[in-house]
Image (cartoon, rainbow, N blue to C red):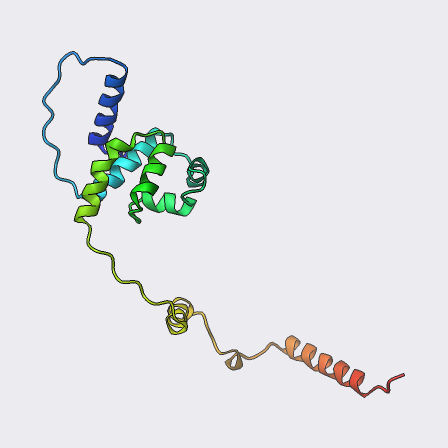
Length: 171
């Protein structure tokens, strides 16, 4: 189902311990492969999300009291955005999870992550460059396009009407 088996097992064991259920015999679990820390947090959050019946990001944002936007919920769950611990713990509570379980995953992810790149200054030149790189293929010089005959005829008729209105004597 795409869930992190180690995280699911830990959640399962915590639930059993919380309800006082003991195992018949505990098997020795092989040590987990060393996952990338950032994916470990994302996988644990996705597992919690699946356990919560996969609510929509908007529903989760409402459950957090809009402290986290629906877009940020989606980006955090997909591992596209790290988020602060306050945001992540709020998300965990909204999904009915226990933040103390996720804190080590969060710390691992932030200790091993590279420092963020410096932000590009928001200047008119940078905005124009972004717009041109995004929409440059779709921008065309309208003067190079030949107008349709029907459009040309309508323009001429409109010009004639406007000229006729401007030459009438005022009453």
